[in-house]
Image (cartoon, rainbow, N blue to C red; front, side, top):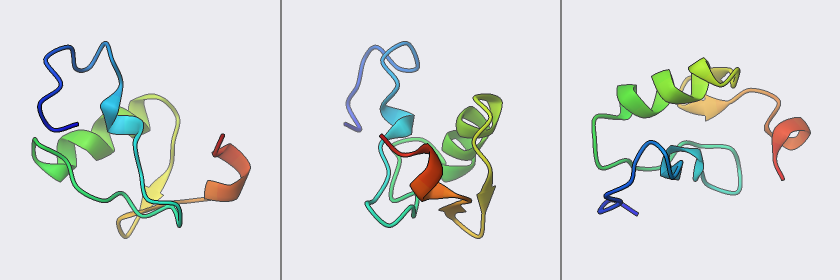
Length: 56
């Protein structure tokens, strides 16, 4: 995932751990958070808020 040449069009920033934690990111983690927040995903303390409600 960290070698995705098509980011952000191919949204690898949406890949998170099964417990809602953000996990890693090739760029700075703040970039991942900003992209998720731009899509309406709330993040607090490195974890997605209401993860069970929005996970697919």
